[in-house]
Image (tube, rainbow over all chains, first blue to last red; front, side):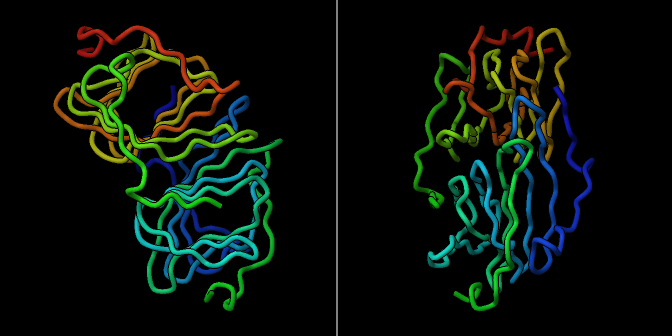
Length: 131
Length: 131
């Protein structure tokens, strides 16, 4: 058993390479094989969002506060709110982020395949984000 | 993509067969193969706890509110608090629950092996719970 006390893991800025705007990430867990779960808390300031990306084994988001947006490739932009859960299928191209005027925080959970949790693609344009 | 809106999934009473005291479970996600993650929100009233159990691929708990207790077989009882994360190794025999006077809620995340998320064992006695 490992207990990671609240406040003992540094929060980092999400890399500009994969995110637009200001995004804070606080790790929750990165399991070791044979397990493959990785979970983290992600806080998006208004307007901030991920780039388009996929996950080899899909992803689950659980919104812990605020209101934001999600979109899959060729689908409409959907609003999400605190308490909502969003699941993406393996390989499903998508993005997620804050609302244009509202911050949003979610827990992100994804499983690694051969050590890879995500494949990062192009940025979400202002036109795409605007819906 | 699947969006499960907050409030659309019923909360259930955790089965007496595997829990002592009053425990509420609200599902977050149950993924389909090739993914294997299951996550749920679990709320324990003061004194309530799981029975002893193991998970074939381990488990991660993230405490979302309150203060509670965890113990591994032959280890001491540890206090846990909001914001803490607790990881159990595959097959590690353990229990988790509320404090004797304080409620505790956590998100539980575990991966299935051949469809099995947990193996349930004997109840935690009052002497064990009391530490």
